[in-house]
Amino acid sequence: MSLVLRFPEYRQQAQRMADAAGFPSADVDIHHFPDGESRIRLPEKLPEKVIFCRSLNQPNEKLIELILAAATARRLGAKQITLVAPYLCYMRQDKAFHPGEAISQRIIGELLAGRFDSLITIDPHLHRVHNLQQAVPVEQAITLSATGVMADWLAKQMENPLLIGPDEESVQWVAAIARHNHLDYCVARKERLGDRSVRVTLPEGNYTGRHIVLVDDVASTGRTLEAAARELVPHKPVSISVLVTHALFFGDAQQRLHHVGVEQIWSCDTIPHPTNHIQMAKLLAEVIGEKQ
Amino acid sequence: MSLVLRFPEYRQQAQRMADAAGFPSADVDIHHFPDGESRIRLPEKLPEKVIFCRSLNQPNEKLIELILAAATARRLGAKQITLVAPYLCYMRQDKAFHPGEAISQRIIGELLAGRFDSLITIDPHLHRVHNLQQAVPVEQAITLSATGVMADWLAKQMENPLLIGPDEESVQWVAAIARHNHLDYCVARKERLGDRSVRVTLPEGNYTGRHIVLVDDVASTGRTLEAAARELVPHKPVSISVLVTHALFFGDAQQRLHHVGVEQIWSCDTIPHPTNHIQMAKLLAEVIGEKQ
Image (cartoon, rainbow over all chains, first blue to last red; front, side):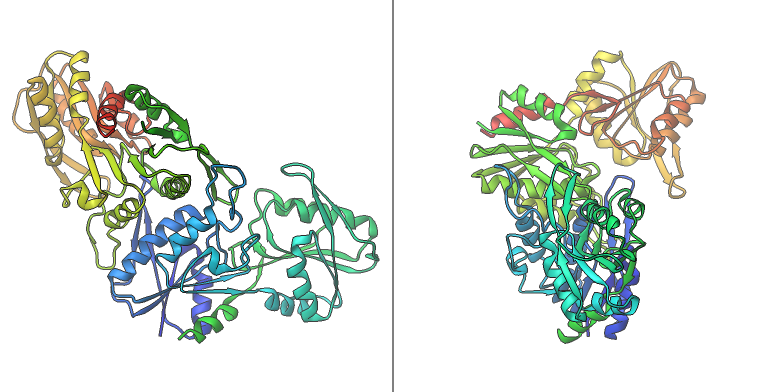
């Protein structure tokens, strides 16, 4: 049976996953020295199979600590090391957008692949590289989708909402959730006007008197969701809500959304955030259970 | 001829080294996204030999960025990559002080060794591992000592100071500087009373009417230097100064030293700090010049 190792900032989520799988769990003890170095301590006795569970938002320091932890686990006898990273980092930098630029997805992918035997993640933000194993060439790369759990959760919140994807890229998520619950959905069109400025055009449709749920995989600046909500308001929907997988929500993104009329914001617990309502524990537990 | 690549927070120092060696130099462009990821961009055309110059205080993010930069340099055709890290990180964690603890020195050492062909550093804080190449198993590991440059610089500041090493470990630095300038020196004895509390006992001697210079390799909390200065004051020296290689100086360390009567604090520019007075550019330039 694998031992689940919990990192401080993702402790509860890792604990829930371990409990759902019926696996034992223990803490990775991390001390940050004033000089910026990290001291990592694992339980002194490890089984052959260990699972590190840490989400990789704000990733740089976490990556160094994962490298320290993985090497230490090997020294202590672990033979099969799995990384459960519900949010996976550096997925957007999958090509050199300008000459001389680092293709960070591949470099970080190889860094992880050299240390972990398996990787489990949820809805990675893949663009030009469509296969997780291409990005992170581990022996076993498992991509889960949160959309099923999100759909089940949404079904308990409201009846017959209309789902809207705020841009073309969101179609995969919004369509999956709509199909799962037999709901109407449509996808808006986005034009980027500047670094933080976007224009969203809604498709023709009747939004009046409907519960609207805007669906996306990642909310970072929230500008696209905000622009979509602003377009919706004149149509007088009953409510506008936001349902996202990964809640990055930089700065005042969340307040801005409420300000333009978004009532509820629901996210998965892939990234710890006050909007987390949907737990991934069971979804993750199923796959780590099967790997035994 | 090698191209020196400068990182933003150590740009001037890298520039001075390149100038002293007569080498061309260019910037590593770094952008920090709000999600905590780093985008690295190098000049699109690189020669076969490149030298990354970055000091590794507050190291975790810098290490990830170095990994991204080194892999990108290889992709762009660099064949020989040198890292000049005047301050080298993770040197203190050279064993597992408690069971289950990461031996970070070795893990980070191997991480660097897998990416750089040579490493040049200044007075690394080695304890139980006495050889830099053991800590960082690169093909060529070069340790320089700042003590010669520090001695030359001190000779211009005051005549016939008495040098004091505040604890047993400092003997190597204080002795080297004293020998270089034919100065008196002695070494105090330190007892650790708690996390931030130390007692320093001065050897028998006549400190009255002398210029005293406390010498050490690293100043972090500054508590040892502070305790030594406090012991000296009743002896009525003419002045008390502090001369250190690596100026970490956490929190109010610098003010505390001035508060107990330290007049001047001088440090090398291995770590950027307001107390930097002694430049390493020539010392580093000599060795990168020889490597050509």
